[in-house]
Image (cartoon, rainbow, N blue to C red; front, side, top):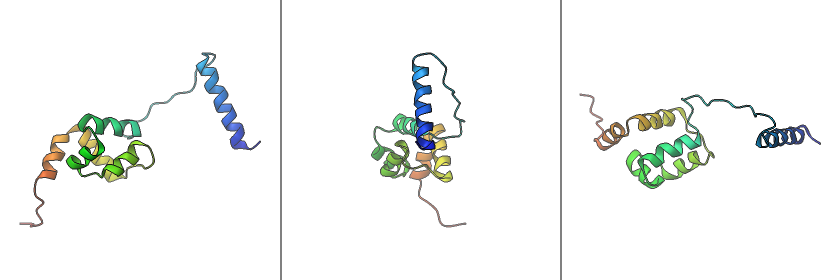
Length: 106
């Protein structure tokens, strides 16, 4: 059997032992700055009933949000920053996006 196969068998045996309360599986804390798919889904669902509604409010495409929520894609640093601001102060983002952009530097 391959090394991957052996690692999978070992992992499932550990999981089964944990489920039977024979041993405690290792756990770890996810740092607060990490946006997991579950956290991204909580941010979105707390503010909008759908990814389309979230798109209308925050200009992040619905399909992109679906990919983040399903773990198929990870947000880049700029999107992580935007999602963190949306999480903490969604009205500020809504206000900023509703204001007309000014290209005039004066």
